[in-house]
Length: 354
Image (cartoon, rainbow, N blue to C red; front, side):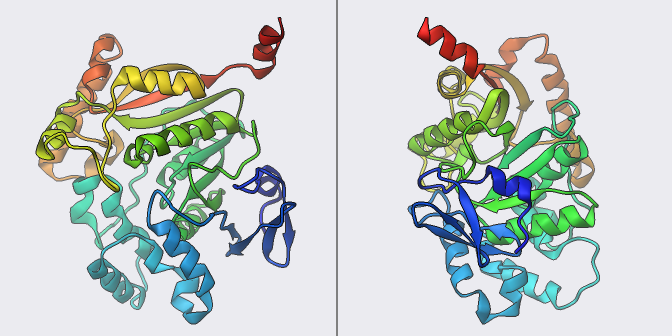
């Protein structure tokens, strides 16, 4: 085991927030809990219920990792792809030669909904988006729900010390491979957004894209509360969320007759509700438009798309730029960034004492 020392210094037990120490390829806390490490990735998951079934699959696969060399490398059953896609992936793994990681080639279908459906198993390049953050000088950024690491790559390219966390072991191992392939560094953890296994006030930036939108209200509140806990004073969180009034969002809500979302279905949020939630648990909150006419449409991905989707993305970009002058457009965008700044803890304590 060779967990990065700077990562280990930030990790805590997700149950008790107590420090972790390395003992014989496992991490132990002073309360007596221990966690496995697979290919230098800490598995800091507790038993369910989980927000996504792949967390349970990751735990099960770790227990039985000696059964198959394939699982040791790829952990296919933790990826959340269909049985048909698993079979196609196994076939592709037996025929190496592609410059694209085979796991990413099949997970890309979950990267941007149906917009990437035609790329499953046929990916020729990695769709790496532009991260709307300033260049960094080693500030620590946590990507919550990192999946195969596209936002981790974007952050590392900007100079951030990057950590990705996701409940899928297969996904984070793919992320490690792709980062290495690109000559970039990042650390990864298998964990739960509601129980972030990091020391209080130990991170500079928390980023999350297309993740908390799938959580129930209670789980979303728990995740946002954790974001506020792990951020340093004056740290930033940037979280993508779908809105209730977006055109495409309204279409989907109508399609399911405005019933309560179930399972992994997307939840749609009122912008004022998001403001109260993030202001209450993180700090001062503002909004910016991510995109219109869908959730997750990125300008950097336009060359991957069919002609119809290219037109949609370009139109979305025009409206996004217009939203900087017409702030009301933020309320009818389909996807927004919730941007929060944690209050200076020392100043806040001083004010309370006064």
